[in-house]
Image (tube, rainbow, N blue to C red):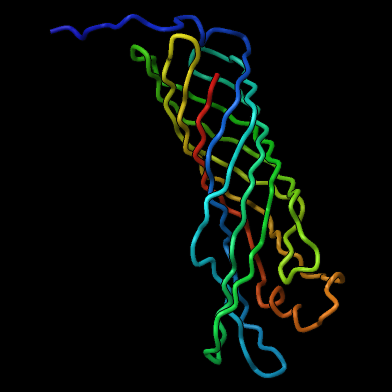
Length: 216
């Protein structure tokens, strides 16, 4: 029994040399923390962790360049508005301390999209590449300050659905930073007691999970 073939929407959309679009979605920011066990003058050690995640909002534009029938090069400048909370647990069992860190990232990913063969009006794909981030939401004077620039790699997958007038693609991506973005030289802090929170962490690298909905 042969497979039923449906009428294809936009049968030549994938063969354009270039096209544009936009996306909106949600994300969750995370930090991979390395605690160093530093004790303060009273012998108290602080251990930092990210206890949970709060959703942030993402919005961006899409620029797509056709390479061949299965590969596309994409530039997707995106704004990520969100925050993360560091929870410090103390060795003397006092009440934990939460420090909220807000980060509004302008992200510039350059990605390679590899698609499967089109099956009627859907087409799965995988995507990956490199990105650079600029943090527009840093707040000096807080106990924790993250660096303004970061870069790393990302990968994910999605599926394109061909509608009569546009293409709709849910896409899930994972971002992994490659640099230590925690700032230790904190001349902006007037209270020396606040510096122990940053000094208790030797390294912090950014991670993010992003779910976007592409319209092209």
